[in-house]
Image 1 (cartoon, one colour):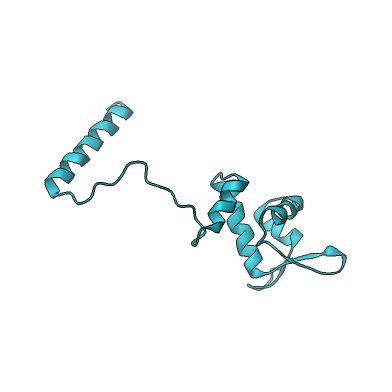
Image 2: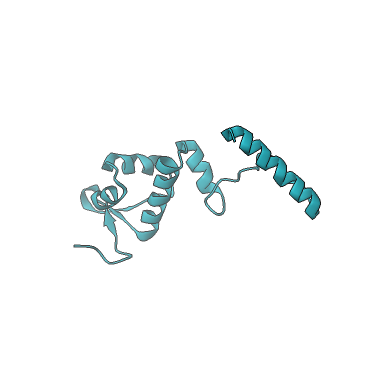
Length: 117
């Protein structure tokens, strides 16, 4: 039986959804202060919709995108929840069409050489 959207989830339900053991969620609670589920009698945890969304984001950062815990903490501190990443090469300010075509041809040549064409 599925719960309605927005219902609180127990730790076992959330762990099952994320495919993680329960102790990982309890560990995340110690490392991510915003992840604070309600605790009822016997320390039974109930994750609110905001907690569920945060746990999903933490899981995405750690287990999909490969962040470290520290990196995920920093990413979650950013206003939009994503790290600020500087571009590898500075973007040239305005290019005219001829310069742009020339640059794209250089990139094409470099890529062709890389794949052995």
